[in-house]
Length: 165
Image 1 (cartoon, rainbow, N blue to C red):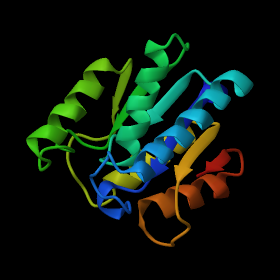
Image 2 (cartoon, one colour):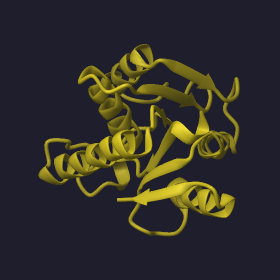
Image 3 (cartoon, helix red, strand yellow):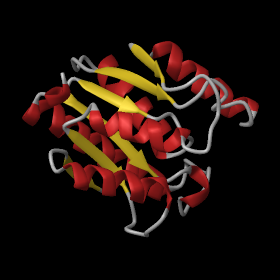
């Protein structure tokens, strides 16, 4: 199954140039590039399973795009990799509702641990990379942070193909 799997990593809302304003043309352009990359993975490499870490920002965009592809008839599934049960507890009501809808629509959910700990997000990211042949990253190249460490981990493995947008 790993050969047909792609996971995502990318910046959270607060690190994106448009913040939470998804109506911004730059956000629409990013989503279009992400969708095109996902379609290429499906049609060229036979990717069928996509894994999202479900954070606000790129992870959420990716999960929604997978569901859009599935609704359009592509043979794809979404797995939500949940770092701990309270991941969305401190989010706004709107963001919690979006998160809940994605989880309900996903074909699979993997809970990595039953409580928060300092390393839970890194554990989730390593799980996703370990399960995947491809990593689709929305990353500006800045060092530090979860996206940079996930890309570094994938590179260190040596058997994960990176697509960096």
